[in-house]
Amino acid sequence: MDFLDELQHRVVIGDGAMGTELLAAGVPPGRCLEELCVSEPDMVRRIHESYIDAGARLIETNSFGANAVRLAQYGCEHRVSELNWTASQLAKDVAKGKGVYVAGCVGPLGISAEEAAARGIDRHEVFTEQIGALLDGGCQVIFLETFLDADELLVALEAKQALHHCPVVALLAGNDQEKFRAAAARIRAAEAEVVGVNCVDGKHALHLLEGLETSEPLAAFPSAGLPQSHDSQLTYPTAPQTFATNAVALFDRGVRLIGGCCGVSPLHIAAMATALREMVTPI
Image 1: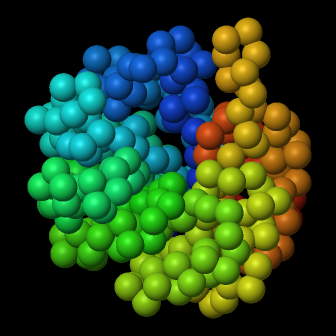
Image 2: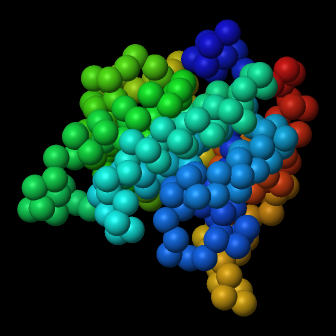
Image 3: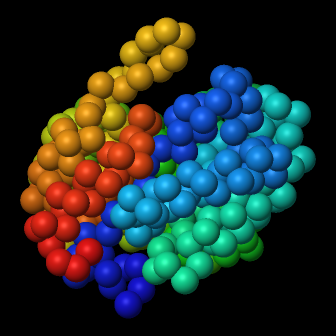
């Protein structure tokens, strides 16, 4: 049974946050997190392993910002292929023999279309470079996440579709339900196999997904709430059991791929896996 077939029959549990787990492990703020795949591979590997141990059946590569535009902030813009290929290989190695899907994580470029044009940046080319390296590294799914701009997500989707036929999970972030529905419809029309939401809390994710057709797979990767500063560290207010309760509500809504975003730890994923396992067997 492949990824899309499985989503038609049961819930698939995703992983949680990579960035906040790396920071919690002692990585200093301002460090290029994607470069850690090369310089600190065991640290990245341990986080992947902790999510699988918690019950995740899909893990995302540590490559959210591994595009030439974002990497330029760290002088790493010429390492796109290296970092994405390595991120894929790390996740693939951890998942081997465990029945876990490896998804290549791709985030937005962090600049507007107008700024890209003014700087002579071809967004399609930038996404093609990153996604191509993730696919070369062995990813089975491409995971486009945390896009606020549907137009930019569609550029990334078009770049992926020109490279490979593997499934795409396309996740939007935002606050406006009407705009979200319109954007989701455009993304569906562009043949993204799985559409959904991330980087909002569970209740907000449920609100945004209300009214969407469930004949095609839906995904939700909520955050653990808005971060709060405590003793110079960020904490997230949503407890694991609350996160699990929200995940059950998302499942009841028809969502079949459920994981977590910022602040979601292996403890959150374990609580969710337990809650969903009681409802649907096997996961």
